[in-house]
Image (cartoon, rainbow, N blue to C red; front, side, top):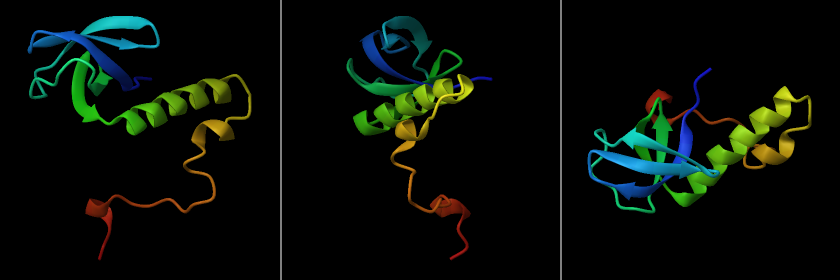
Length: 98
């Protein structure tokens, strides 16, 4: 299974960037983004930054990854998905028939 990781840009040359997530660093391609500055959160998939994230979205994705780990370990994972508890799922706007 491949997961997108919420990473933070540590240094960049415009073409690639050194990004970090929980102490691990990797060099990723920045060719799909318009040269975001150091400190920016990005979603990284297969060593390519595919979109910008705000701090809250990066936190939620990190929590979801923790929740997946807890579920795989047979632990309760509700605390990792607090933003989803007690609400109905919503379709993205482009999939709604309004």
